[in-house]
Length: 121
Image (cartoon, rainbow, N blue to C red):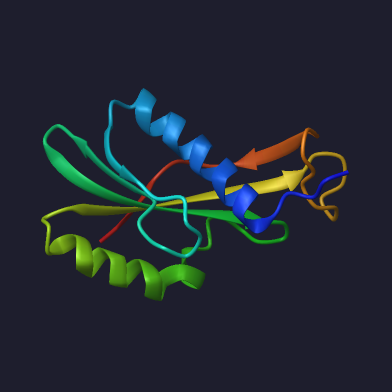
């Protein structure tokens, strides 16, 4: 069994968020899948620029706990303001569906905990 790497988990989270953005009518200007290089998505919607930071969060982490990334997110928000862009955080919790204490494996079921974009103001 292949355990998903940090990069593979990140890519999975990006696919989940990217699909939601596409369905919501966002247009992609740039996509960056490199770990720890923000933002992952630079998009427009209704002629407004958006910077979106995506993080995959493994168990027992809580994707709703934004404080762990607050410093990085504030830096991104400050950078986005120079471009008159809005900044959003998209945290995607990913956990093994059979046993939360096991890693997520390739081609095995997993649970997604994702409530959508959180604006960083």
